[in-house]
Length: 309
Image (cartoon, rainbow, N blue to C red; front, side, top):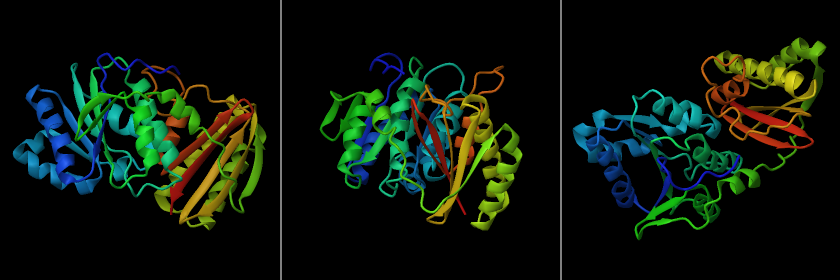
């Protein structure tokens, strides 16, 4: 992936705010300008912000699509396909406006690397499209590292002092920086597999997840994701892999490691082209998981998935 230039029809500014007034002053004009121009507008931010914006917009709020980002974007890896592209692709030709706030102070250290990579990858996912995505950042509540990363993932930064081009814009560097080896799992049980063991390892994983507290629809989602990743390992990852599973903070966590390498950072984060056969396995994993973390290099790939019990 090469960093797209910071010009063209796609716009991706970061908005730094320190209080509600600055939040309103930075977001509401963006919404109103879009509505006045006849552009479809979506607001994907934490639900706590919905009331504030709706109060300011009045009846015009009915023309805006509101999405609770804490639910729809709980896994940062599904925001591009499940929120941003889902809205933009459904609109008629013309510019689309979206406010997307994927990072908030309650995000955990485990989630944040996926958030930063998401913000970097938006630039490649929408390069050349007539889409404006404004990303608010709670500068009073977020860590300084998060704000520094925002300069690297957004070509334009807006704060109470005005708007300016970011001299640190380098989304490729952020994707690479957060492609870090994942912390070793605590007390995980593991099973190696190849083609002959696929059915058995999937049954084993489902049984272990049930023992760790996963049930109902979430267990079914996990079984589907396990099937997709283990198949990917056999087909694309050298013919075999290792599945590990454990419990962590009221979540069932599992990972698949193999000898393959992910060369496309957007793999699993973009809808497959219409008519393409295959290519949807990692996308499905992102859509059903509460968090997906990935590390890939010349020696292999690990995809780690989190499912809340």
